[in-house]
Image (cartoon, rainbow, N blue to C red; front, side):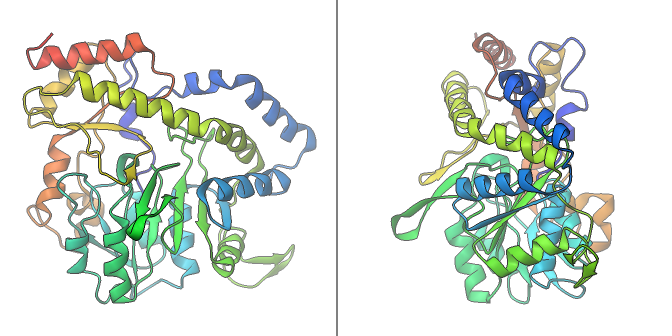
Length: 390
């Protein structure tokens, strides 16, 4: 899952940065009164583990996503792990995913005891390429597409390939809260997390819907799967001291649930602000050297978690931004198939050429609902100046 945006904070937000890549403090201040009241309510009741706060958030988030159920868990990584486990995926199984993502997407597969298999991404979007998937889906136990940067994957293509292979699809929607797409035959729009057999979400603080710590959720229309995820997150428990199976301590706590329920009320407005800022970038940065803007695909509405451009001069542009106090970042500089942690899988440089090109050329510019016009103007000025334009 494109998870903890630690590349967001290792360097981009310098002490003298005038425009941070992400500003969680500004997000808090925008709803400070409601957030403080929600946290105080939990503290007064003393109900910190599961309980009504979690149940209320789960119901609200399921309604938002358009699914029957949402199950709150401890992190986005846990969401994928528990979704896989609920499906019965484990040792000896292979899960097809992508290498242009945060390591947690593959890490959760390994935690379930399965083996990740990486396929290449689409040249235009950086998301899973259904054509590449078609060569790998046979024999797999599941397919895990990642809705990268907030833009939904070509789910019609992914579902067609997975369906032919008889393989369930789990959506990694960690960056796609509120993203949507129109399915074949004009069905939709449907929200990310409501299209595959299960959807998984991270509520890491820098996400569009961010908690005040780690948190996540699994969404599904399958009641039996939802019940199993809920049991697995709570030590396999069926009652206080009865355990039907071995589980984990991966519960969403009540404080995070209360925070998330407050923030959920503002998510659609926040996503709309991101869209307006993204269009402003599109217009101001058009035609600059080899700078490629994020893809806009008909029928797919991005949540604009990140505004990611591409250029062969990425490292120089990054240095220019940082020198000017602009908190640019890279998501993600080293693809998973080339990471030491995944060396045992046997991949080599050149195996996933499109993925490797994305990793070498992508750059994230500041984008969040509270980004002021003057701050965005400064980013635009620096980027245009780098390419010799005013």
